[in-house]
Image (cartoon, rainbow, N blue to C red; front, side):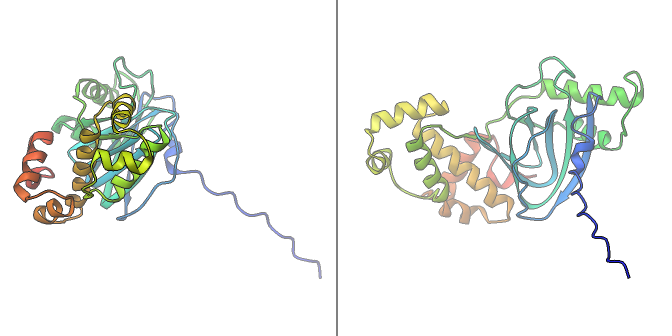
Length: 265
């Protein structure tokens, strides 16, 4: 009896997005659903990516920082940008891959955008469009209108930049780990062995923010994650070191224009 011939291991299937993120069409869109806590590995796409979740919250990270993306927002990730995504809650992601030369005026850096009702419907419509499509067809016009909306939408302050300086990165990592810490700039400066004024200058140079602004942004983004997970506003306020829920609500409204209880509506 002849020996059984061993079969080579099957090659892993390419990620599903590879059918969308490198084609010749200006825009191609797909849907994907994820369980709470799912983390995509570090990856990049040849085309730019417009990421939107119709349900759930995404935390998108790159080497430059991280962004919180609730259902009222989308994030633009330029082509060739290494990034990873952590899902908060059940996430129903709807994403469009956009060729870099598809339109003039497209963002050149990672940017959180407000999602208008029109853009939301255009993203949902784009998912049902199967490439290829003719530019002068109904499908082509839907995709062109989607591009027009992306160019017009305002950028929103949901970004937490990461400094390159090793000492500042240690400070930032500790604050992200303990956003309720009462440590002051002087305390952190002593911990890393750098003069406080030097720390402040480096923060401004590398993040475009003062230390206080960066810490406030870190706390607000941590608050968004907790609120998205269903934690009550009063608990979030106390967990993040605010003296009262009203102080937290006032800070939240100044940053986002609505109270925390209304942000995800």
